[in-house]
Length: 192
View 1 (cartoon, rainbow, N blue to C red):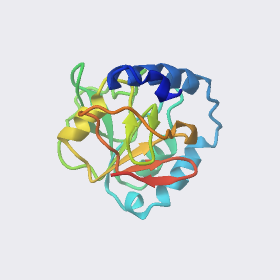
View 2 (cartoon, rainbow, N blue to C red):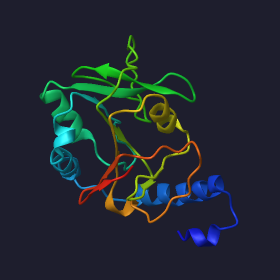
View 3 (tube, one colour):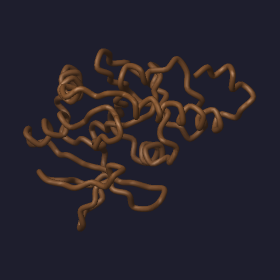
């Protein structure tokens, strides 16, 4: 999508136009069986990510960048895995999980008796519809990750994306949080 054609729209409206186009593209994108291993290999190639202890990870769905291999690696290596739990229509928090867990259709943890974690997370993997090399992110529009990252900034925020999700520019608003890194199957971009 050419953002120049949308120049008379507000940033919010430009973002919504982009979301519609990118959701459609993501639904059509065919994910190979090896995708999870590609992201795991790229993830472990960064020493800062591999030596961390506490990971807040989304569970991929609907064509998002694959986190399954990373989740399995965290669990096999006795690291702490946290998954998102929706605590209201506008807020989520990480909750620590053990070896088995269930999530809803949006990737939120559904287990009962979870304990919210409000301490510093070492690495937070963040989904998105698009990113820039500089760390800008276009999410789904609900604001869960922007609110969480603004209130509980992790040591490292890492946007996971397919290479086609890297755009030259994304409209931003004051509440949008920049990523420290963007990880794709072929690149690691350093953001803010």
